Image (tube, rainbow over all chains, first blue to last red; front, side, top):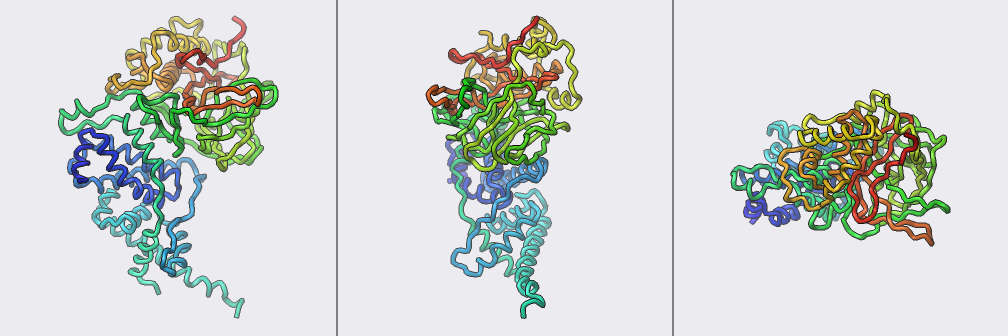
Length: 184
Length: 387
């Protein structure tokens, strides 16, 4: 079904493209918000990625690669937005993270630590983690989306996880450190 | 001790608990833009004939929207409604009330409201180039220390309160040169000396803006030998190599040949006269205009058909080619007035693009080269006095 839509869209069938874009838009926007942490830039990135997808579709040789290709376009668009933000100074409004605890009480405690830790990661590390853990891409697929070798993608994920693990552990020690010799 | 595996699990759980973002608006905007954007040349020549949309002005419009996230000219892309976005805020060709403007008592003026000024002209559009931002607390001088600070000595001041309707962008609308806003704003400026690009306020509610208007009827606009700051020339006369093709060069030469003088005011006025002449047709449906890889301005000089974007880009490119600093601005045309309440209603379809030209000692002066639509004049240039 998706393959048919991609082939039709490649031939210029805009309705087919609309169906593909509609199916992908929510996950793309959520992923972009996670990576960029700015809702306006995330919208710009998704709009850019979808427009580029439409314009470049005739160049997509294998329709089966649609999802991976679209993710790569999104990563590029996010990187462009990141560069734009750096050029435009540090005035970009950062949004708070939105993941919620759901039914897992333990996650309530994780939220702030992960949020802060995630914010400190480099954009490409955030992208690697979002692709892998949120979108569910395999490491080779993450590598393709990021345009890097598989080993590099694996490394980005590994060090991203390590950084967050350290953040979680540091936070776990915080109450003791804070108490120190004051409260007995 | 948290193991690597534990951390992976907690990260995955946390990320997967992210609520879905509402993508309806961005999806609608992206699809609208893509409807008018050309697809790349495909692998089979047959596809080229059936799917390639020529680089029309409509396509260029879409590219502009992506590049800057801002814009959109009135009646933009035909034949359907809809248009680009201002940072996610739909700007639709419709009768929606974009903003309502409350005028001070005794102010009967109706002003073009500028949203963004663009310094970079590309072959297929325009955008804000390298820029920096500065926060200005509420009520402080907006342009102090920037190159656009022309001083407010003898200039006319006007104060308006803007009440957002469907135009909910944080971008501040203002006539001419804004000098005060009643809330904290972020100023984006370009060039080494700092020229205005846009203002964004905190929040999305109503705001009051004070602006100074360029002088009307000042002979200095006909200064025959302007000297410009180097940064101004560098920033606002730059053109991509392919901007001027043979047809635009002919148009430029005609402007020079037939203008009242070689000064920037007369050259700008002559461009407006020529573009507003019947030789050029205001049209929004440009899908049958095939300009290949021509620039927007060359395409317009060739096809003689377009809407405000094509008119504005063409004027700006000619001026820049003549080494006269010019920039493209977007915003809204004056709206419909209610004299009883002294308010003005501006609709989404009043979104527009025009040109500002720099005059030494005066600052930026607006010119609107778009052919009159209906009976409303599109000229906002002041009439000079003197010879």
